[in-house]
Length: 147
Image (cartoon, rainbow, N blue to C red; front, side):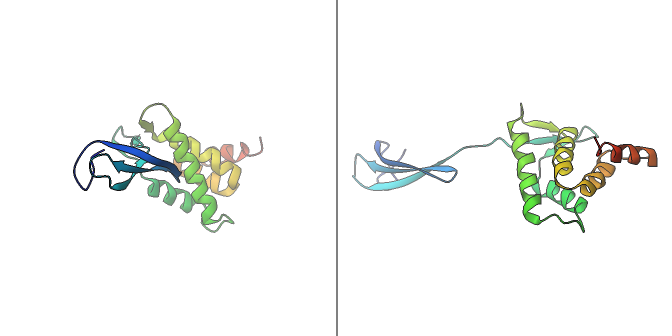
């Protein structure tokens, strides 16, 4: 680490503490004796979504949250519940192999989570995600809720 005061690169760590999602290190420069603080963060590789069309775009948490909020309109689902659901989906995607995820992976994870949270929101989301063309497909999806 380079000292911000004298620009020397010889220092020692005096104290280390975990602070939320980072590590705070108190350092002392061996040349000038002054102390300074650094923080270390875990670097997360951004996810890329492979859409139905084959096009690739960066994963957008807000876009996912909007889609789930639309499914939960006028339902007894709190904003906190939606936020937690989005976080669980995002964490699952981050844990998966690689940095590219398909729209299908995301849709299936959201459907699993919505099924536990609210049946009506689940069916609403499924109807858009699965692109139902006929009433029979809609009815079949509702029947899966009984299982």
